[in-house]
Amino acid sequence: MFDFIKDFILIFLYTILDVLPILVLILFFQLIILKQPIPHLKRVILGGFYVVIGLALFLMGLEKALFPIGKIMASQLSDPLFIGANGSELTNWANYYWIYIFAALIGFATTIAEPSLIAVALKAGEVSAGTISPWGLRITVAIGVAMALALGTFRIVTGTPLYIYILVGYVIVIIQTIFAPKQLIALAYDSGGVTTSTVTVPIVAALGLGLSSAVPGRNPAIDGFGLIAFASLFPIITVLGYAQIMELKTRFTNIKTTKQ
Image 1 (tube, rainbow, N blue to C red):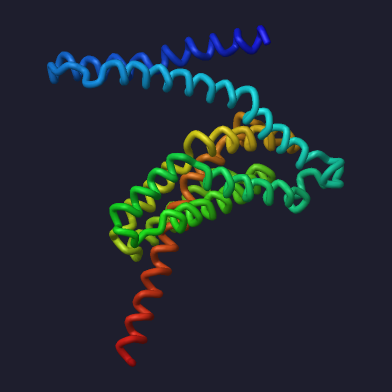
Image 2 (cartoon, rainbow, N blue to C red; image 1 turned 30 degrees about the vertical axis):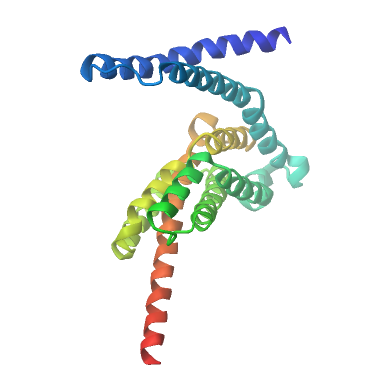
């Protein structure tokens, strides 16, 4: 218990130092540039305290739970006894299919629960007057992240260069951008960014580091990172693809209605 309190106090102090530049910047613009008093000062102070406490607890949760869980799951799913492989078979990508399945499922689940994506999806539904379904957007993005993590773990197991996947992915995005409905392009690009946030990033990073530590011949410093890049890229592809499919569906319906 004493160690827990000690760790929390240290993380709390570091969190205050991290938040301090933001606080100074806001106070400078409010008091010096705008020359206006801070509205609802007591509420702002209380809210700021809640933010610091929340961030400290979240960071501690990452250190004590999420990072260890990600590494443990990766090491267990890639354990030679579990996959039934030994020797040269340990580098055979086909033996790690449970890793690909787990990565896809955890990517889908964490994305559905991602607060940043939920906020963007709700706002997209509001500004589009219901044309964009918040749940539809969340599921589409989650499918993209699931595909991304499955492919990203495959890259770690095989040891293939990261830049090849990223280059091919962005070529696909550029081609899709040319043909996708213009009103959804910006939303698709934002969907890739908001996906990699508070819930997804810690587990994804821990999964990549754990897997690269467990697979023979892989270096965590070189192969362990890159999953987050996949998780940022593939939601753009899936959202643009969804937009293109819906546009084609609308055109087909209009043509069918006109013929009737």
